[in-house]
Image (tube, rainbow, N blue to C red; front, side, top):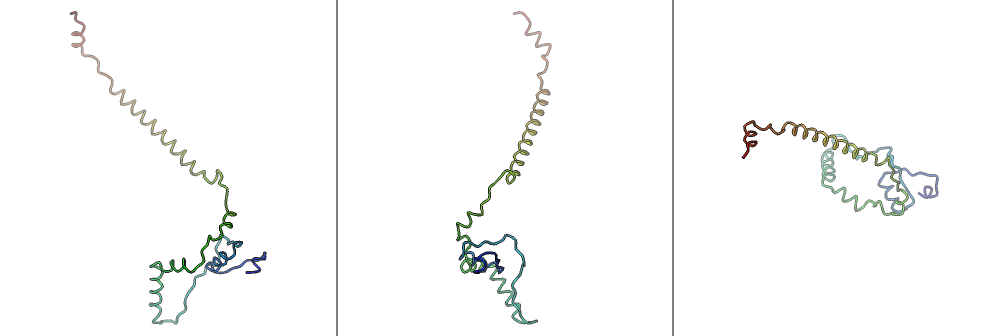
Length: 146
């Protein structure tokens, strides 16, 4: 770790160990890419009577959330180095939010199309409901001199 802190060296280890080192030394950083995906395993002899018991207990620990509780309690907490996180900020530009503008534009176009369709339907219904011509009998009665 001293060589890493001195510069020009990298440290490869399990994530939990690296996280612990990062909380002690705020100048350390990790890469985003994960490589050498390894899983830990416990070796047991073939046909061991303890295999099923051990598997069930480990499964119960994972399903009950006990592993998360242990991790929060015993593993190092990240984000203790607040000044290190300020160096990782990124400026938001138009390309980062362009999908929001596309959605707004599509919404406006759809709203205009629906408005035009409703207006056309309204006009068609209005032209079909024209006032009926006045009946000839009513016209004669209203034109009679009194």
